[in-house]
Image (spheres, rainbow, N blue to C red):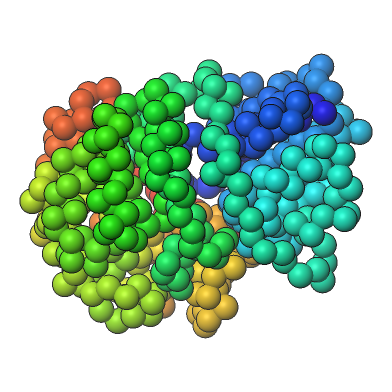
Length: 449
């Protein structure tokens, strides 16, 4: 069977870090490897990086199966691309997959989408390509059906990174150029109320020797470990480092970690830094205790502050995420700026609280949501989807932008980024940040509805 795997480009109104951060499409590389192992003819299109339009890329093609992957913000674009595929190739079947399809499959119900994979997407896609009837597959969404148990196949095969060879020099993560990605676990042992990805499956880990086998196949020097929480186990962290030594693997790593782990395991943090970990992304979420409790974060403000300083002390970069609330006033943004500037290098992603469909926060949310669910492109955790309680949307956007300009983007931090990561990386990040700046400026002048 001839199969096309495609990652769509976000809508032009979507504000996202892809302005200066494009990770490799790991899920498509897994799918490519699995389908090829069954003898299928497979191609990948990373439409984020392609210069030609989708219809021009499909010219003269005749795929049997066209599979799209994406998040909530991509739903509208996936539907549009599926319609285009149907128009140009009437006999093809279209597939929607990815974490949003697994958590909220109903968003993809559309006349131009034939198959929605809401569980076990990898093996189900292969079975369908092999000739199985999608109507008989439990892992294909059907109204009123019960979702099957999750079966992971990712430890049986490795993603085929050769299939994205023409794109690979463009894959990066924030300040790390030519960056590959790898997963060593799935899900998260914690269930923060705002977090979407942890709703996909229960926490499960890969066998670390298999992880090392895969690491040995990666050519890139920089590797982003995309586990929801790489530091869930101190024993596993130590074993990971031991195996790096045993295999003589030398890479530069970035990973996600929790503040409570960092504060309780300073020796493991030093060990990670000694083994090539340049940065950890820590979800601080708030400088206010009550908000951390609301998010079911199970950390404290004191732990957050101590974690950042521990990372700074060992020479690791801390990337952090902060959520700003509906009831924030100017004084709250002022306090946030002062809090962040108490650290050496506050490189932070500031997000308005977004009750993502499929999360407990969405079910519990009691404020007025002003952005329709069908404006998928605006549910990017950057647009304000609610009615702020103490100021207009314009002022709310202004204060978010002001917080960036006075912390991560101030003169001191710009100089630090340029000196630590080099002029080429600085120019790339500056260009992406400028794009986001003008997107925010547009929201201040013409707020989306």
